[in-house]
Image (cartoon, helix red, strand yellow):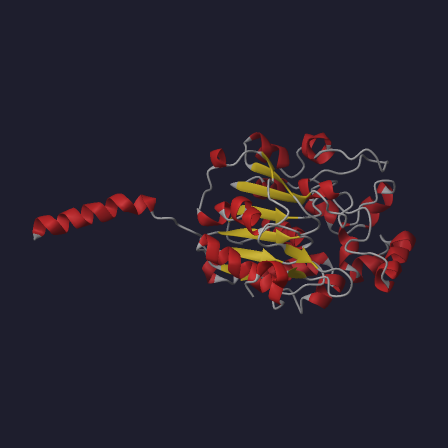
Length: 334
C-alpha cells in the first residue's frame, strides 16, 4: 500500500510541470462599445473557453458614451484603479485590446503605478502610432460633424477635454500643433518628454501580438496597428514600424522587444476588427494559455491563411451602433 501511494505521489509530481497554467486576461473594448453588448461579451467568453483562462471585460464609465467623450487621462485613471482592485489579477495578467481599447490597455501598462504585472499584450486593430483622420467614421451626420471639428480645432483644449478620439489624432502635416495640443498620444508613445519608466514597463512584456486587418479602412493608415505611420511632415509614403522614429530611437521599447523576438506582427484577412475563429485560436489563444508563451512556436511575421468561408467572424457593424458583434448567420453559436 505504501509503495503504491509513493508511486502515485511520484506520478503526480512528474506530471505537474505538464499541467497548463493560465493566468487571467482583461479586455478593453473600442469606441461606441460596452462590456455588456453581446459581441464583446461573447468574444470574451470564447477566449476564456478556448484558453481555459478567466477573462474580464473592464468597463470605463458607462461604456459607449464615455468611450467618445471622456478624455483618455480620465479613462486611464479609472482603468488603473479597477485593475489594482481586482485580487484575481494580483499575480499578473494578460491584456487583449480591441481598436481604441488598446490605448487604454497600454496606458495601464505604462502609467499605472502599483498595478500587477502584465505578461502578454494582444492588440487587435490598435491605433498605436496615431490616427490621421477621425476614426470609425463614414458619411453619417455624426461623422461629417466630427470631421469638420477635426479640420477646425482638433487640438483645441475644448475638443481634447471632451472628444476622446481627439487624444490620439496625429496629423503628420501639423506636428507643431500636435505637440502643443494633443494631451494623450505623445505621452503614451514617450514622444517628446521621455520617461524611462514607461519604456521599462512596456519592454517588460513577454510577448506583444499586433494584429492588423489587411483590408482595414477605418484606421488611417491601417499600418498603425503595427506601429507603422506617415513620415513627419508628409502623408506619404507609409513607413513600416522599423523605419519610424518611435522604433529607431526606441521611445517606448518596441525595438527592444522586437530585437528580442517578442513582437509578433500578424496580418489577417478582413477589415477593421474582422477576425475568424481559426485566427483567434491561432494567434490569440496561445498567449492566453500559458504564463509564458514560447516565442519559438510563433514566427515574428505571420500571414493569415484563413479561407474566405471560415466558420466565424468578428465584425464591426458600422453606421450607428458601431459595436463589435458576432455575425449570427456565420457563427451559429449565439
